Amino acid sequence: MSLTAPLRGVVPPVVTPLDADGEVDTASLARLVEHLVGGGVHGLFALGSTSEVVYLTDEQRATALSTVVEAAAGRVPVLAGVIDTTTARVGAHARTAAKLGADALVATAPFYTRTHPREVAAHFRQLRQDVDLPLFAYDIPVSVHTKLSAALVRELAEDGTLAGLKDSSGDEGGLRRLLVDLGGREGRASGPAPDFSVLTGSELTVDAALLAGVDGVVPGLGNVDPAGYVRLHDAARSGDWDAAAREQERLVALFAMVDAGPEAEMGRSSSALGAFKHALRLLGVIDGGATAFPQIPLSADSVDLVARCLRAAGLTPGR
Image 1 (tube, rainbow, N blue to C red):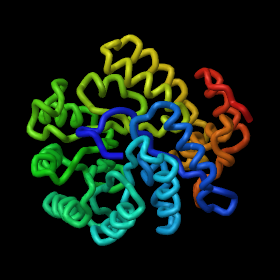
Image 2 (image 1 turned 90 degrees about the vertical axis):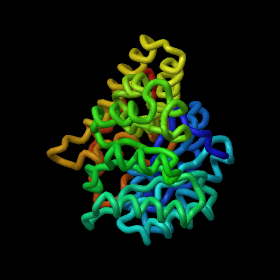
Image 3 (image 1 turned 135 degrees about the vertical axis):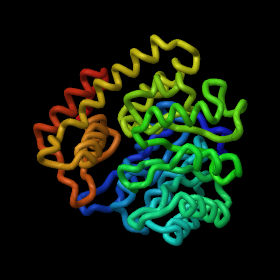
């Protein structure tokens, strides 16, 4: 499905269900896509951080992406993460994603090695030149140790290198300044890059981000309750900010499931991904809650907390 310009709405980063052997559970993944599309989402982001992309082999990445593309069946656009350390490796993932039918690509800055902003710019320009698909920059400095500056993002937006930005920087002030620079609440059409899309990766401040002028949201929790994020988005777009705030507050309470695994015992990512997967298992969407090794599985008590969060949010576990 062709992307709108700019891409708007709710675009969940699709979790990757795994079987007992650590392989992609394609049947569960196809059901998850139906769950998301049925919830009214506007796009799907496969092979992002919530998809555990960095834990997957190249073969597993291809299996997951092809499953999402096939299950989506053109109903919503599919964005493919092509996250890796260097331009050459990212380019190889990008070519595979294009062959598998992705509608757009999502890439971070190079990581592990230290890079200068000019090198980061050259990285994105090379990717856009090599593969003729819309390219979104993924700003996640906690993982890649490089913050994409507003000046660099604007430069790459204006010259057509980037179609958009997924902001997971945690720098809400910086995001607000970028939005103002690109056109603010009047939208990108009034700014220097009319087709550029800004998406927030924060689950907990979506109403505020939409008020500030973002085009959409990429919420990991949206795997569990896609319809809730769509209601939030639609209320904000219609100007019903009270309804948007109420829905946001319900989702904030639901997000408490990520505290199921104490950080003293497991990583924050392990806790969040395990919670999302077990929530989907309890809702009957996927078959198992396994996360990729060496992430620590949730305990039985932690799974019980996930179930309580679901019930409190009005989502009834079926298992």
